Image 1 (cartoon, rainbow, N blue to C red):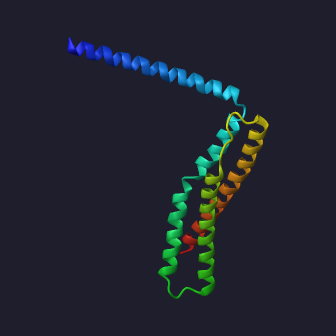
Image 2: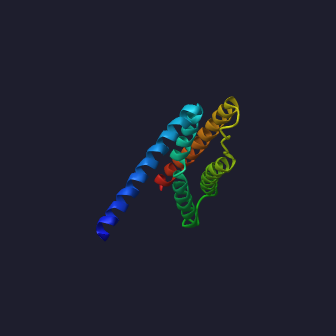
Image 3: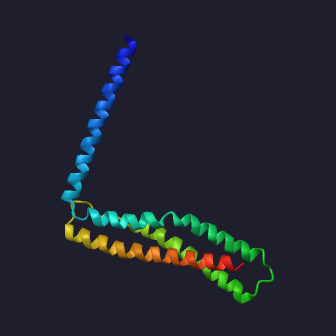
Amino acid sequence: MKISTKIMFLGLLITISCNKSGSHEHHEEEEVVNNPNQALYEEVMAVHDEVMPKTEEIYRLKKELQDKIAKTPNLIADKKKQLDQIIAELDSADHSMMDWMHKFNPLPDSVNQEAAREYLENEMERIKKVRELINGSIQKAKEEIEKK
């Protein structure tokens, strides 16, 4: 008797979970219909999600360049200055991502849809610039490291 009670209880839990999951999906669909800016918000977040993982690569490249400077005591002053500049660009790109994330604050649904759209369009431009900075600094660092 105990086993059949447990199976019935488990079945009930699964049924309840499925129903809640379905109603949640329906709620999300309603939200997209009621909020025309949702697609733009998702585009902004897609750019962020594309670039955010690259901060680990920035850290790794920065470390490699710092090691290159440290392991080459007779490095020509101009070359050291060039490597320091690339490190500074990596830092700047990383800081631009952190700055964007701290300042990004999507407007609540209760705000005027036009104001929300304008805000998201501006944020799209800002995050695209962050992406350019990150990708550019990473490319420069990789080219320098490959020179050996």
